[in-house]
Each structure stands twice: as C-alpha cells, then as structure tokens.
Amino acid sequence: MSGLAPELAPPLAANPLRRLFVIEADGAADALLRVLEPFALQQARLALVEMNTTGPSVCIRIEAEALCDQRTDRLRRRLEALPAVRTVALGWRT
Image 1 (cartoon, rainbow, N blue to C red):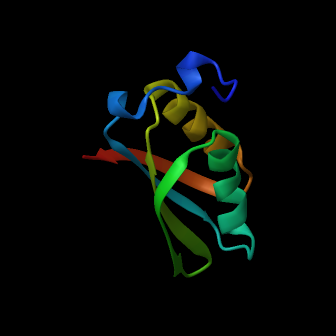
Image 2: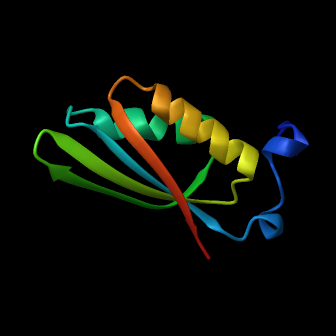
C-alpha cells in the first residue's frame, strides 16, 4: 500500500467515471504548470489535458480518473484558491 489513507485512495472499480475539470485562468506563461500542481499533489491519474488560449486568458480542460467525491472537491477548492484561476467548472464522463 502507498501509505495513503483509505478515503484518499479508493479502488479503481469504485470510481469508473472520469472527472472533468474546466478551468479558466490568466494567460501567464506558467498557468498550465500552476493548474496541474494540485492534481500531482492529490496523485490524480490524468487521462486528458487540453489548453486553449482565448485573448488574455486560457481555458484548460483536464480529465482525471479514479477520483472519489472527496478528492474531487479538494481539487476544486485548491484550484479556486490559485491566484491565476478565474473559474472552475466540474463534470464527469463515463
């Protein structure tokens, strides 16, 4: 076992959904790296990362696998706390 508490490391079969995060952030050169950091801290398995520049901001779409509701909410709060992030929207895919 990796040493994570059971509520932070649920089995993959318990979470077959992909969580979708759509993040609007300032268009700083390091925006993508800053947005990805909370995912690394939560040891999220990323299935897709896309970034589009729209004027002075960027839209980042991230799909993550095997995240329970608690970890998803923790990620949302951490993303919203980042100074460069303007909005965070959540969804899911099967």
